[in-house]
Length: 187
Image: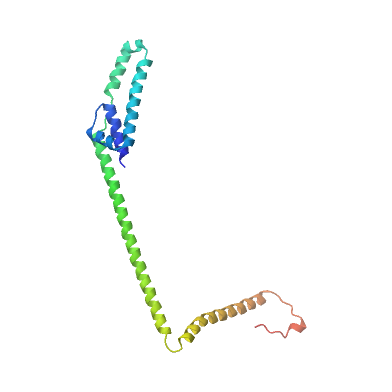
C-alpha cells in the first residue's frame, strides 16, 4: 500500500549512498520493492561503468572537468525532513478521510434500513387493518364492491371526457348534416 513511499526512500538512499534499516526491513518483506531496488542499483552501476568508458581521457584532465565534478558532487538530492513530515501528514489525512467516509456510509445504510423496516411495518399494519375491515358479514361482496367501484368511476370519467371532446370537435369544425341525419342524437 505504501510502496510508492518506500520506492522514494530507496531512490533517496541510492542517491546519498546510505542504507536505512527501515528500508532494508521493507525490502525483505516486499518483492516488488526489492526488484525496484535491484533494478535501480543495476542502473546506477551500469551508468557509472558506461560513463567511464565513454569519457575521453583528455576531458577528465581539464580544468572544466574538475569544476563539473565539484558541482555534481555537491548537488546531491536530499529529501528534507519537512517533506517526509508533509507526506506523512497527507497520508494520515487520507486514511482518516477514508475512514470517516466509510463510517458515514455505514450510518447512512443503517438509517435507510431502519426507514425501510418502518415502511414495511406500516404497510403490514395497513394490510391487517384492511383485512380486518373486510372480514365480517358478507366479506366477499365488500371486496368485490371495493374493486368494481374504481372501475365504474373510471368508465364514467372516460364517457364524460369523450362527450366533452366530441362537443368541442363539433363546435370547431363546420359540419353539414343531411336531412335524413338531422334527427340523430349524440350521446
